[in-house]
Image (tube, rainbow, N blue to C red):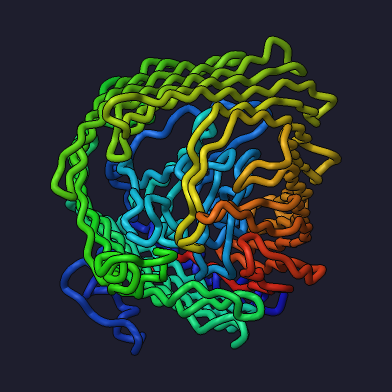
Length: 611
């Protein structure tokens, strides 16, 4: 609170400075008698002009799918995104029922999501292009710690029957007054995090932005070595009311020290890598509002890796086996994407079509896609279809929500996935997801169903190269949820999933997440909106999870429950944040043998201001 008082004084002075900038002209006359008497006044034969702060046309951004759901929203703008307490995108995804996050430690350790037990059914799109898994150790599974969540302007999670798609749109500026932001946080395990942002639009509509985030952390010596990561973003561009061009680049450079399993029975080797994603984009119109819009993008992605291959050939018989088992993994991977998209917005109707061409690895793949949605007061429908991409998998899904009465609603989604990796045959799997509920006052009570067809799972090899990718039969899960306002400022977001079998891989049979939170600006006490308060308590539970190994054996991690808290206090444009994870000090693991941190405090301040 002392820090808040200090910031309040500094920011109050800052607001007064901002108001002064609104004066359009200040003219000092050389003939004024007062000038000769004021030693601090300076004569000038010309007028001094203080420029008015102006808003320039926005740079282009990618389209977002319609947020079709029942009694919940998976959309966050820039302020609300940081207010979730999410340090990485993995923290954000833990809110999705049916999705299970796996961590091998604190924020620097690998983090991978499994949707209904499948690790490749979660995809991330940044400004319209897909962030594909380039790390050779991941075997096609994206490590979410490589995604710069902190640079997002807004985020949306599209929850379909067959996969979960995350859409991030990066930060843009429109004001000619320079905008600066600084975030400083610290916490347990010697964690220190720093962020800095700068952005400005010029009178000729040019845009200049850059930002950086750096963190470092050191676990107890028994569990590994220190790690650090540096993320950088930069953007230059120009926009008129109808046209836009911008160049953007994001880079994530990290050193991850060795992660040692409990009692030293295993380890995840140290990891040094750099991932760079850059694009040049031409845009016409706004995908959110324009009757006709279009975009063209050229994207380049590069991954540089330095590491040592772990032993993944149980019994090498030949010289080639030995070379494969112990050779260095130092490598560079380059991939390109070429994307052309056109779309239209007509009231509640939105349609778009895109052609994506993926290049790299000596081949070129075309993956066209179409999307259409209509959003009415009582009905919302969204459809999406995509051709086979680099993973030879084609997708089609349909989502709809219907609220015939204000207190009764239903949501349904169907998806189909076709895998053409086998030349002489194809594999098709269908997925279903549904939910229905009734609202009592402002609280929704919901029940639903998840159904996944027979599939071949993907192994999260970054955790352990001996993990297998088995086939698994059909699985069905039952869901329940409570969402909405409990009382005045107190809200609830509670969900639970129960699967029909106890022998499934990479998914717990029982999983729950419960969050009670208070969010208010206390407008009666602070009518200017200069104060905000948010406090939440989070309880998570999951039963044991089975991990298959290549030798046909199975290793399991036991179930656990944790409790965490998050406190956010905002004064003007400064926010003090404190989160306390695993309050009870539970000793647990999400991946075999790799223990998660015990009680972890992480706190800091975020401050955005005009220069």
